[in-house]
Length: 549
Ligand code: ACM
Ligand code: ZN
Image (cartoon, rainbow, N blue to C red; front, side, top):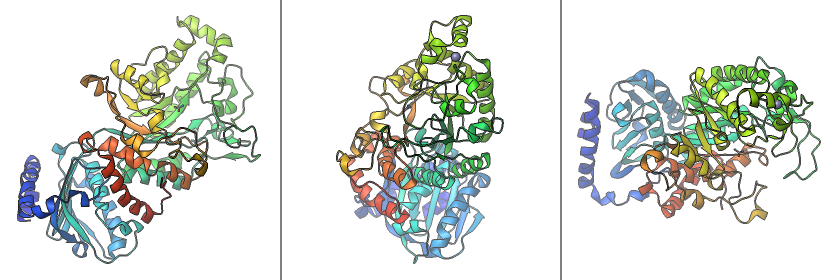
């Protein structure tokens, strides 16, 4: 104990980590009767190193959170911690400057640990979380929560409780750990989106890919083009089931105002989650065309789609107005998502049917010296990529952006399998892996589909996700370094509310969280399943609706 306190008071950052590592074995020699009980402690995703120490910390004495060196960066995290503990412990917790005192909690930053990394130590009289940055401290707090009784999650007054002594050293395997949500096929209220972000936090995902525009609805207010939401955010009715041919005769829609977008972006940022907005082009754009028909090859009229699928009417790249419009939209998007290094511009499933017939498109192909409509798709994406680059950001696109040649700084999101991602990595592009077989959480998670809510099809259970590696085996080390991480996608044709969202992502995102966060040598499906029994207690305490298959 003395050593840890002394260690925390040392200013040399490198020394702190060195001492932490040096002191770890001392704990085990002094209390090695507990050291073999590592798996009593159940943390998802599995940390890099986890050692149980004998003894416990009692929360009775927890009334101060010390912030170490970088107080400006740590204040929000300390506040988060205070707000989390106060209602449960039933007493005030002060936040003060300093590096720790017996019976208390200390948060600190040591940049030598690296981004998102943390050391979490609980001993009899101190809880210490040292992060490589504030995000690392925040993830350390999320780990700490899994050491507390599940009822803590209810956020209501409890008697003082013991936290087991432990030493954890942890950092993520991948920098990109994403969850996607389609709010176009069905729309989800601000509070529901925040709840979705809470799910990301619990599982240490750091990217929320927000699919904001599609054929069935445009869901983000753009001040310069009010018809996008006045017209594009609403459809007359919705097809029943999987394009049954029958419709429900009920108008449906909704959108986020810019104030609501800012509120959600701030909520995510407070939790170290970056939101990447997706504005679809050139395909999946019927809702935009319904509002501004002059941007389509035929001039319309168009209406917001009322069924699912891929539609022939897409933005016309022969028309300069299309680019003027999209650039203006991107200008507003960049202001709303200042901290995202990326804008996702879709690029998937864009038929060439209209372009082949359109005089303006034919002229564009001729004037730009393009070979065909595939190169026209590439012209479209490259032109938007250049514009977005001029705004200091880069594009992500679905793997169809490989068609006709890839834009210089494009990151490829590989969804039609892994081939697109492999090709892009071999060309030296960054890649995010989300092959539909493994990462489409709108698929069934049970073979007993009769007793499941209607889903897209397919079969993707935790075991399949858990045994997947985001790095395909045929990449060499250099190419593999291009795989930034992976993501699960949640398309919502058949998902109408938050309850159903929870059912589709829980517990599959727990399995994916270990694939994306934990080191491969720590992955063990049998142990994961055991730990899941414990994690579901936390799901229960939060009132989540999760799949029990
Ligand atoms: C996609 O699922 N169309 C990216
Ligand atoms: Zn055209």
